[in-house]
Image 1 (cartoon, rainbow, N blue to C red):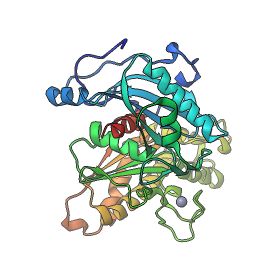
Image 2 (image 1 turned 45 degrees about the vertical axis):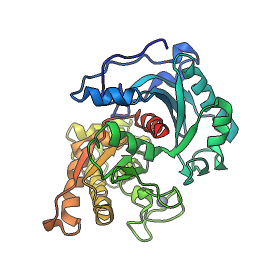
Image 3 (image 1 turned 120 degrees about the vertical axis):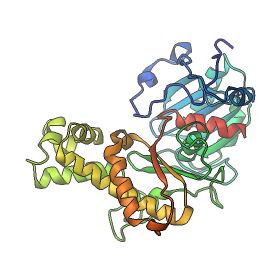
Image 4 (image 1 turned 30 degrees about the horizontal axis):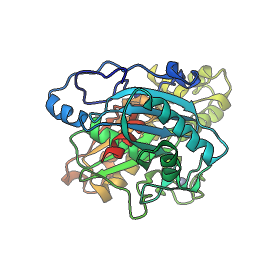
Length: 367
Ligand SMILES: [Zn+2]
């Protein structure tokens, strides 16, 4: 091993909760593509962390539509080394080859005992096959065996949002809670649920797809084929849609947002809206308020079923912080069932950022 970080940590290094684009994917493969271990903060329960650290190292791989991010993770959730590659777009075997390549690269300097893969798709109950991935070439793909055969290590496959939720539960904003819902509010809504300290997968492995709860009968068309799904109302895509509607009907009100995109509403992005809102632009704040209200509506529905003690909100739209969470809490408090007679669930921002998926996958490979 070339570099082992000393000391203890309760979370991975480089918490990048703002989703800052990582340019390391553009680096050439090889040792130079590896990121250095990052400084770690000390914790009070160092002995417990030391116990987990001694459980051995695993590799977590986060496979998304555009990038494959992988890292060596210790039992305390610290990332010791990480690499990124673009996701090959055309065939399932190319993706498996890329996963095997990053595992081989990371295994040069670290002795690892298992690999966890967080994949943007529906995973079967055995954590072995990807049943369907809307943005990747997988259709009933035996990913676990494809990768295990290439790398010679035990492999588990998990839904990427489940892996993120698990990471926040173990090492991030959900630490110490036993019942939590983690929502990744990006282009759509990714979600993972931990109940009684266990990741909830459902009977067939494809539970916790809360973004596809239908909240508006015959509402906006969703990529899943239904209409009115929650993620069509409480996501980055929804934020941009609302902002463009304002630009189309009242350009003067949308002036600050339009300025951010060169006057072309078709080029308006979610970060443009968030930036304008941070500067106090009333129209942009209104957009985030609407998205936050829809977020609170869905959280109230989830609370009726699950009664979590905490919602952890991550993803790019969560960069707006209280501009999103304030309205979400407000609507949640207005509509949650039995609102005057129950303890309120907390709503907090995720802590682990863009590394949550690989950290969670690595930890799930350990247990
Ligand atoms: Zn849907």
